[in-house]
Image 1 (tube, rainbow over the protein chains, first blue to last red):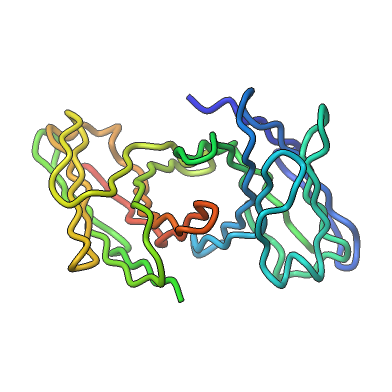
Image 2 (cartoon, chains in turn yellow, cyan; image 1 turned 180 degrees about the vertical axis):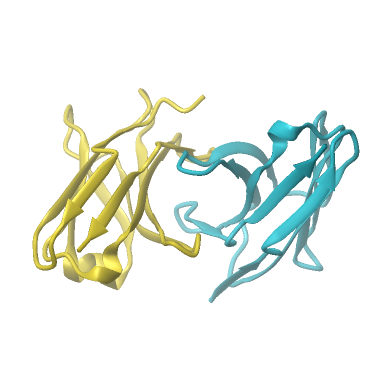
Length: 112
Length: 110
């Protein structure tokens, strides 16, 4: 069973508000991924980290999100100004460098 | 681009088997993973394949044909509790980012 912890489980924001969610990866896993799963079950990769360094991110993430994985603190993903289209399940996964990814339960964001 | 396709739904009967198909067309390939996801829950890792052929893991088996861009997940001796969505995900060569299909919702009937 996955030991990835995500908080909060549910988040409700108004349009234009900031929305912040957190992830604690499995102990010993240096790589963290964030994915967005929309209501049609379509997954979109957002960003990944190895330790505190960003490995890869998509344009949307670069422009509208801020994310970090500080040492000894939870990783976080924050939408700077929420839009209705951001309503989705945000999944955090962690892994060893080249192994399978283990997912947390997700943060379900609703933007009103 | 990354294209991973799965049928949306599949139905089968308790005690029999179900085969969940996945086709992919991606700009790079570093293996394919299968996950199970129940409503409102995290995807749970089931299997990873990178070489052609059948990988038998008991209740779940997976097949891969890289030349055809095709994989399947085979569930045998189905139980009602196997009803869930099954996600196929291609692992990209760069940083192992996963590109998912939209999942196949399997319903196992008595």
